[in-house]
Amino acid sequence: MFAQIKVVVDLIRGAMSSLKAFKADEDRKAFALEMLRIYFALKDCVDEGSTLLAAAGCDPLRSLQSMSGSELENARTTWNAILQRQGLRLYTLAGRIRSLDVLSVVDPNLQAKLEDAIGSKFDDVVTLQTIGAALYLRLMFRRSETVEELANYVAMTSGSDTDTFDMPRVRTEIEALQNSLHEYRGLIERFLSDQELVTFSRRARNDTRLNPTE
Image (spheres, rainbow, N blue to C red):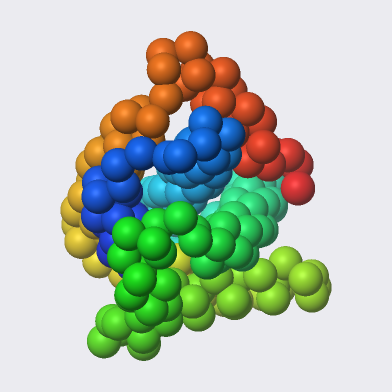
């Protein structure tokens, strides 16, 4: 998931770096606010995703099977809540990213490139689109899951098409994505004064914060 998200972030960064100015001040502010919303949603995906995979280990099923009693129930509750939030974030992000009309003026092929990155650019069986769809459908049709099913969803968020994943690879992908997000935020700051950055960041953070109990 992290490598796929990085490709999306880098495509958006490339278009943003070519965007010079806005004719109307309100357009500038609206653009910056929306890009900050995308930033915080992406950052939350990375932060909670890395937390989940670190807790699950490279073999989530084995980790769950090694637990018993309250430890197992706590893990199932925590992992389930994170997966639900990740599904909602990815679904919302897809809509926001597909609405970046301003950047499409700079790069008319941007949307096609983003669709490729989200759904079919990779050789992996598991793509960002399949991860997002699976997690969102899971959110919509909530039902009791076996530990095997829960573990499979957790492993899938790593980008793996098996029940296990390569932890060193995932850590490398997370670090690379975090660096891209840092540069992404730096580009947003070009369009805002210091005071606007504080105000808009607070608003965007509030707009994208999910209830931790959801």
